Amino acid sequence: MEGRLINPVSGLPDTKNAPEADSSVLRVWGGHSLRGHVKISGAKNSALVLMTGALLCSGDCRIRNVPRLADVERMAQVLSALGVKIHRDGETLDVNAREFTTSKAPYELVTQLRASFFAIGAILARLGVAQMPLPGGCAIGARPVDLHVRGLQAMGAEVQIEHGICNAHVPGNKGRLKGAKIYLDSPSVGATETLMMAATLADGETILDNAAREPEVVDLANFCNSMGAKITGAGTSTITILGVSNLHSTDYEVIPDRIEAGTFLTAAAITHSELLLSPVVPEHLLPIIAKLQEMGVNVVEEAPNCLRVLPAAVLKAADIQTLPHPGFPTDMQAQFMTLLALAEGDSLINETVFENRLRHASELNRLGADIRVKGNIAFVRGVHSLSGAPVLGSDLRASAALVVAGLAASGETTIKGLQFLDRGYDRLDLKLQQLGAKIERVREVEADIAIATATNTVQPA
Ligand code: EPU
Image (cartoon, rainbow, N blue to C red; front, side, top):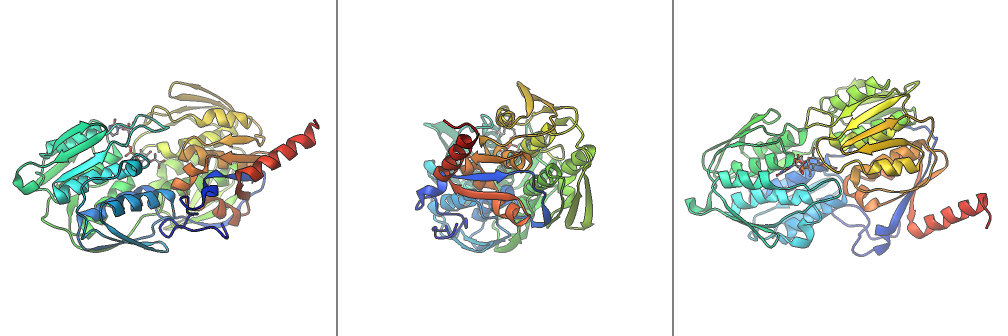
């Protein structure tokens, strides 16, 4: 990254001013074991939603342990466009929404980052009016926002969707939402967060039933409570929010990223390595650790916030069904598919959360895996080895799964599609390098030359 412009908010190469950053690729030479300790960054899906939660208060919100991610940078741009002041110093983000008066979020930013739609709850709660472009579908599924909208309507908002914009306002009651009893058809993480934020400043009590129980939902509730909100029950299926008239300043630390930790656990498992990971909340990782143990990988709690992963002699096959928390997380499905590709025996993966999240299977097959996909089910027949090849990540977790595969594949794997990886992993390549992985980030053109040279060596023209 030397010599490039670094964006002050994300800490990543500035993609606006350095066009070459978008076209970089990762080169990985597999077969090397990892060792040492890896520091886990703050949780992406907490940090993003806490940033929108800061809209609820007109005082200073200090958010610590914020990961360096392209998505954090985009969220900062959305908030800035609404009139919010944001300053980053290392992993600390200072957000001040005193002069936040704009209710209209910019189309070109919201459509790039689904989490920014979740701000509709906080904007409506603060201003009584919000105009939010629909986030649209993405590579992993259609991802509608009907549950968000219906919940806000139950709280008294009038919502109209026209020309791709969700226009919401609160008629009467001085623009203040009213507490309501809301049952979510499915425990959507985003809808739970949107409605929880909306309810913090509403008139009266809101009860969210069949709410999402993810650790990031609990983190948002704790963050709001640290500003004076009255939220109980987060982490269970019923969340109760007693509305207050305003919230105050806070200083809050984001929880560690359980999906980043899970990704490093799979990287250790696939390279038969011993690694230490901290800080983590072991309880957040239970479904991941249980599945690793079923596969023969031992994970022990070294200290309350530190895990040690020990190598398995042989990786055993296992079946996986993705489910809302505390079930097995969909955000770890791709990385486990890579691991199961090298396990002894046949495994079955059933992706039940998103309808189009198995696209990495075909890329893993390019590396020599034996995976068949039918609908939302992947049949994985374990193979003895993978062999490096150029591959393309189709979404964030798919890209991470390909990096994990590259660590085990013989020879060189070249991974394109890093714009996805950089959205959600805080310098994954650098962290792996520090653990001993042979991995480097180069410009695409350099990788193409290397591939052409290697091909020519084997098969002279
Ligand atoms: N859904 C609806 N209607 C809605 C909302 C959701 O039908 O109004 C459906 C979705 O289409 C999906 C299911 O419900 O099939 C679950 O979606 P959910 O709303 O729970 O997901 P999300 O809030 O959009 C968050 C994470 C995702 C993670 C999911 C599930 C953030 C910013 N994103 O998305 O993270 O996969 O929860 O745990 O918090 C990732 O980090 O790679 C990622 C995609």
